[in-house]
Amino acid sequence: MLSRRIGRRAIAAIASLCATAALAQQATDAVAPEPATEAGLVSAASAQVAAALQAKAEGRPVTGQDWMISAANPLAVEAGAAVLAQGGTAADALVTVQTVLGLVEPQSSGLGGGAFLVWYDAASGELTTLDGRETAPQAATPLLFQTEGAPMGFFEAVVGGRSVGVPGTPALLEMAHDRWGRLGWSGLFDPAIALAEDGFDVSPRLSALVVMDLLRLKTYPTTAAYFLPGGFPLLPGRTLQNPDYAEVLRTLAAEGAAPFYTGRIAEDIVATVQGAVNNPGLLTMEDMALYRVKERRPVCGAYRVYQVCGMGPPSSGAIAVGQILGLLQPFDMAALGPDSAEAWRLIGDASRLAFADRGRYVADTDFVPVPVKGLLDPAYLAERARLLDGDTALDVAAPGDPAWDHAGLFGDGISPEQPSTSHISIVDSYGNVASMTTTIENQFGSRLMVRGFLLNNELTDFSFRSVEDGRPVANRVEPGKRPRSSMAPTIVLQDGKPVLAVGSPGGSRIIGYVAQAIVAWADWGMDVQQAVSMGHGVNRFGTFDVEGGTAMEALQAPLEAMGFTVEPRMLNSGLHAIEIGEGLEGGADPRREGIALGR
Image 1 (cartoon, rainbow, N blue to C red):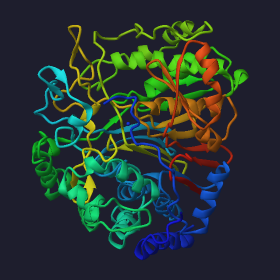
Image 2 (tube, one colour):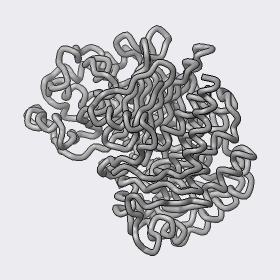
Image 3 (cartoon, helix red, strand yellow):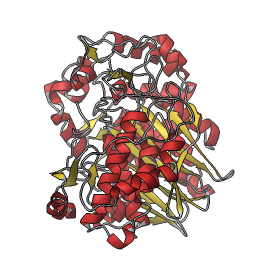
């Protein structure tokens, strides 16, 4: 169903940007983080959007020469494309795209969450990352998610204030714009403000997810009033307005991110978290004021002729993706091909080995030592790859013993990570590349709503167990600490130049989705649309999940014959990718609503 109305002023705001341009020229990882629905079609406000939707339906990439954007909702993509067409940078477009996404797919990301950005700066040729991950309150302890020494149930911990960390997304957007933006900050909020005030049509996907989460959304009156007006879930096509969100955006547009962390917005966030009935949280005004985005060095691993670079700790994304690819390096994946059970045996067990290391070693490096170099050392990976030399599934995938440049001995944690997440890939006309994954964790986050946006439940990405066999768990809760993530925004380089930007939502399966897309593109010769559309196979902890209704189901029997436990299921990725070559090609995951647009 195509949306009939996105708001007159929103269209006007986008059209104004285009006109100016013409003048200038994811209580376990096994649970789906955001259940699969029909992707739905939400906008055909322009011929370009309609063409992009058609290209995705036909399995073709969108092409361009000047710029390209791929993200999870046509309204957000169209607004971001207008910024790029005006001469804005990828950093400018990120502000517009994220603020629109927070309105039209609030279950996935928004101002109340956090994000990781991988940025390639064309002028300097440098790659960097910005860590906008949420932080734990100063009053948090390793026992935050335990009751009488036992881990709490996942949703017992999630719903309410206990799970809310200090949001990082507004501060990250401001830092990115300050460093790399060209257009005025305030105008970048206009499309989202117009949509919030005039209203937008509820997409089939948002409506379906509201229905699936109806009982939890009923928990708090403000949230229920928005998503369940009159006691009934939002229906597809309903025009939904959010004046409270528009007012927040006006404040940010006029004053920057400061009011979010030290002003009126911060006060309301803290009051809502502390006042959550039955499950109050610990967040204070001091916690909000202390928040800082951190610039970190990217983590890179070699694969074939490429350098695969992404976000390091507190994310496990770049390490685990790099490990999977490094373990596959000795094998001729191109010759095996995507229909080979042997190829998937290698991918599946490489992933299991990477997840074993991830579970033991990876956490926030500001609090615990992490052997990043050792985990990605080619010699270590070559040694671990020998475990894949057989022809059957590994009996056990245990953590390895990577080299340390400092001491560390940790136990294995229990981290039921289920991010409800979104990914944005952008290449601008100046050659800058942005790959940003953004989240509020579980779908609809903590189910607490403040001033028109949802608050995250990101603290439940910490381990619910603080000690294992007398050893502290690296990813335990600590004051001010950032929980481990699987988000894997990635930029692939060849000879120092970017050739691919990719990332996905999907909880801890993000790692598998991204690694598979890179193998499909690098080894199997797929274009970006083919790579993000192909059926998934993901193995993290022993069970091999194969995507139902795709060619992967045909591999169930041969994989079982190799000794795997195989479970066909819906695998709800949201990959958004851009290939950078002679021109630009964009692909958007058909499992969700997004599109790619380029010029």
